[in-house]
Figure 1 (cartoon, one colour):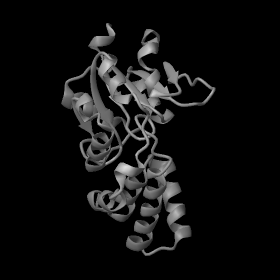
Figure 2 (cartoon, one colour):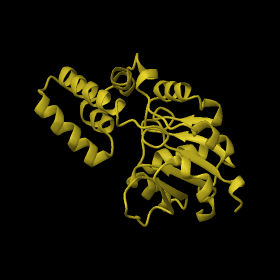
Figure 3 (cartoon, one colour):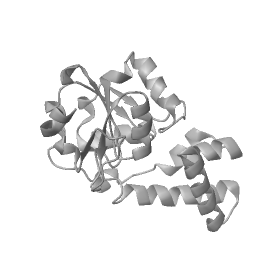
Length: 214
């Protein structure tokens, strides 16, 4: 299939921008505070719950919803507050130019809440590069790597998985995509090449010159 006929599914955090520098630490502190406050536990227990739910479900939120009846919208609203977002977003120069140059339709496919995703895309100036945004709300709170979230996007957009390319920094997400017969791109500085990744790049900016590998 011609690359221009494919649809790109881009993860957001640590794929299109560096969330580890400032954003993820803030989210981590906010999640800790939220769990302590609303479950009435100390930090040690909050840490244990987060780690347990992350390992079991792939997302802290799913564990909180299933075991504690947490309102997902309330949780996301309270853990993704960034009044200084424009100052803390770290994105590479040339990102918008690369996306505009990249052939094919492009969709954001992120486990983040929509308001946050929209805000990051606005700060980085790349919102118009994407035809749609699929956040955790659009996936009915079945985030990656859950197959249900992938199938929701494919159904709603009328896409054949074999015509899609997932670009993501997380291996377990690529594994689900690969099982669905998508092409996969792993954004990582690791030296290894996992079988679930058709292509590994250190920076998303490397995509245009590596298209021949897909």
